[in-house]
Length: 168
Image 1 (cartoon, rainbow, N blue to C red):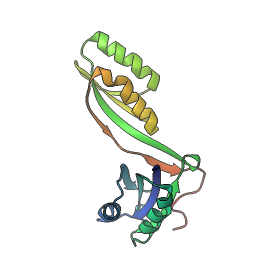
Image 2 (image 1 turned 90 degrees about the vertical axis):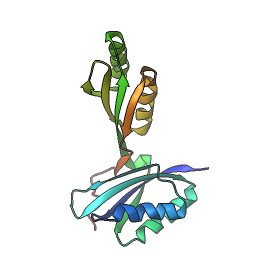
Image 3 (image 1 turned 45 degrees about the horizontal axis):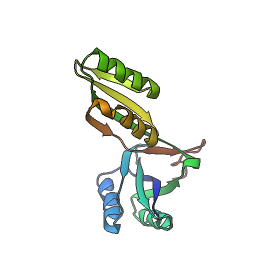
Image 4 (image 1 turned 180 degrees about the horizontal axis):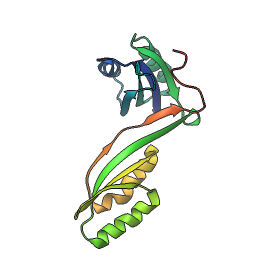
């Protein structure tokens, strides 16, 4: 039985890091379901949030393989009880006519997405939240006709006052 694994990986902020980490996963046959990367509060480092599904006994092996890379400074396995996670969705939905727009606004009201663009025939909405909430939102408005969507993937931080990079 596979489980979702969320890794927070602190890496050097330099060219080629993303390729080296992604190729490690590829060589080992692990699929990356979601990957977000951005510079941290210290411009020398970037934080990667990687989501993959694997057997729980493989969690430690993946962590150890990552830490062997000299560009990787720290790895943490994030669990729901010790982290907060969020995802960003931008979605363009068909909404031609006042009745359809009103119906879409009514559905949207339950989720609190922000309207970022309106045309005569569409709405573009922005929603942030847990992956499950984003999935539910997409499901709720799919009958209107999704024109296109883009998701950032999961990004996560450990709970508490400590910094992931403070002891590096």
